[in-house]
Image (tube, rainbow, N blue to C red; front, side, top):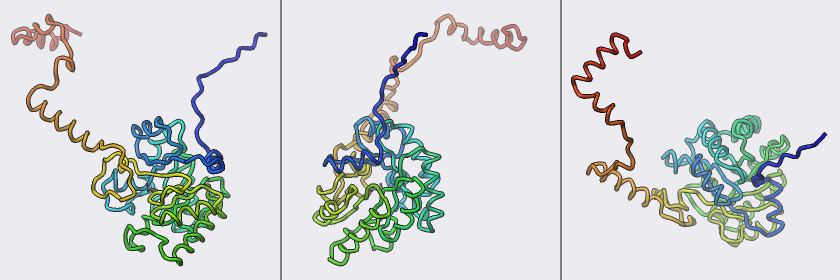
Length: 304
Ligand code: KIV
C-alpha cells in the first residue's frame, strides 16, 4: 500500500513559557505589548512581539474609566477571547482584574482557570509580591503559568497614593527584592517591574533566574512592555513619562474622520467608485405609472 505524506503549510508555533525562560538565558530581549481586541492583536502579532498582555489597563484606554479598578472578569474574558482569536505566534497573557484573586487562592484558581479554559490564553498575570506568593504557588501547582507584577501595582493605586516610582528608599528597595524572590520561589515564570528606578531594576534582573519585563524600569530589564495606546498615540488623557511614542495614530484617525465628515457634507462622498449600478430598463419600470402596475400585479400575486 502506498503511504501518502500530507504536508500542511507551517505557521510559527506559539511562544511558550520555556521559550521566554530560554530568551533570558540567551540574553535575547523579550518584547511584550498590550492589545485588547481582534484587529489590533492581529497587527501586534504580525509585527512579531513575543508576548501580548490583555492588560486591565483596558479599563482606562478602551473603556474610559479613571483607573483599572472597575474592570470585571467578564470584561477581561471578553477581550482576551478576541485577542487570542487574532493571534498565532505571541503568547497571550490575561490580566487578572481587581478582586478576582485578592479574596483568596480558591477564587484566584477559579478565575485563572476561566482565563485558560474560556479564552485559550497561555498565562495569567497578577499583582503583588510576598502578599500574592501563596496564590501564585497554588496556581502554578495547578498548571497555570503566572506572570508576577511588582513595583507600582495599579490595582493598589489608592493605597500607595498615586502613580509613583517605587523602591526609592533602601527599605522599599529591600522589600521589592523580597517581593521578586517570593514570586520566583512561588514559580512565576516572569515578573513585570513597573515604575522601579533603573539601577534597582537592573540589580533585580541580575539576581533573578526568571525574566523581568519592565515598564518605566529602565533598559536593564530582560524585556519591555508598553501599552498599545501609549505607543501609538491613541490616548492623551494621561501620558506617562515612560511611554514610548512610535506613531501618532490618534491624530491620523481624527484627521481622516474630519475629512470624511467634510466630504459627506459637501456631497463628494460617496463617488461612483463606491456605488452600485442598476439595469436602466429595471429603473425605467419605476416611473409612477409603471410603479402602480407593478404594485397591482404584486397584489394579485401575478409576479410570484
Ligand atoms: O494592565 C496593564 O496593561 C499592565 C501593564 C502596564 C504592565 O499591567
